Length: 134
Image (tube, rainbow, N blue to C red):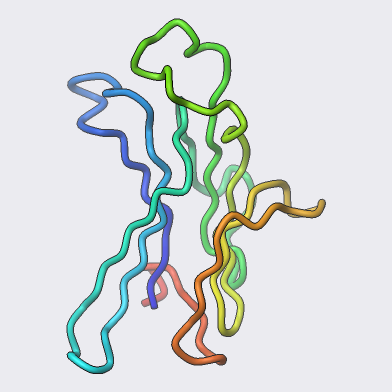
C-alpha cells in the first residue's frame, strides 16, 4: 500500500492564487486482491489556511512516512474564502506506518499525539510505504 499526504489547493496557486481553504488529504493506493485493479482512496484530514510539507520538520523514516504543517491562524480571518476553517486544525500532522496499520497523528513527535485517523492494512505484517519506496 502506498500512502502520502496530498495538498489540495483547489487550483493553480501560482497562476490564480489560493482558491480558498486548502485541504490536507490522505491518499492511499493499493491493488485490490480480488479484481487486481488499482484502487485510489482520498480522505480529507483537515482544512488549512496554508500548508507546508517536507523534511523541514524532521527526516522521514520507515515509520514517519510523511509530515505536513497546517496553518489556520488569524491572518486569514478577514478573507471570506477561509471563513470555514476551524483554527483547531492548525498543527503538525504525521503519517505513521506501523505493521498492520497506518495512522494520521497530530502533534510533535516527542510528546503524546492525537490520533486523527486509523487505517488497517489487509494483513497484520504489511506496512504502508511512500511513492519513492514503491
